[in-house]
Image (cartoon, one colour):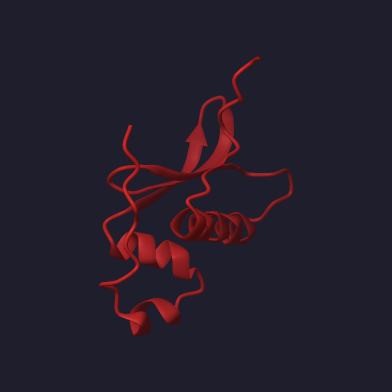
Length: 96
């Protein structure tokens, strides 16, 4: 599958800079989305994707607040947008 490079231009920096979660804001401004909720058998997960790729999939940690989960999701989206590093806490690595 071909990787599509995410674009960081085209967003008004004034609209993104004021956000508590700038990477989430940028993703949504560019047509991406996030989803937070149950993903059985996981009680709470946070997933972020754009039109082409899944950028982050996180499991909510025991005792983690929703704000902390959003902060981790924002950081994971930043790593995906800048370094093309996908964070996947949902899928188990292949055996081998």
